[in-house]
Image: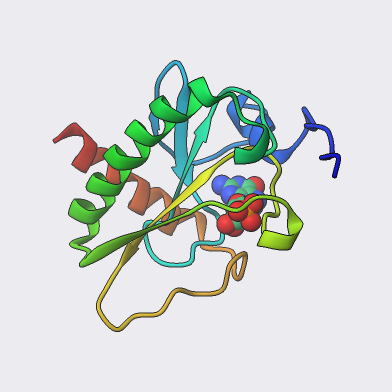
Length: 143
Ligand code: 5GP
């Protein structure tokens, strides 16, 4: 089955280009991480490679190693920042899987014993809460 083409104007491409705002917690030459605006839990962070691909299925394999190095770094930082008991890492490919934004990204979500995830793309979080949570993650990353 043929995949749809990558859309250079998808929302994450615009965030990567700085055309729309985000609460960034980390960036380097290959990867940017920022807060999810509809978090499934406090501290829900998205780790996004700068290289364009719709998702894992069409990604350049060379992009995946650097991406997951940063996924680990963010997972460790959110665990520390929020005193989490665990961390869920999620990644969706194409609509049938639940993907809603078509630029490869990995969800990193702090988890707490007995607390279920909120719905995927549920409710918008207040910008001040996202800013505060981003600050906590940046502090943990600064070590
Ligand atoms: P997907 O369903 O593609 O795996 O996840 C897309 C994620 O992006 C969702 O969790 C959703 O809440 C988040 N999201 C959608 N629009 C925006 C946006 O404009 N900014 C940010 N930071 N996150 C977004």
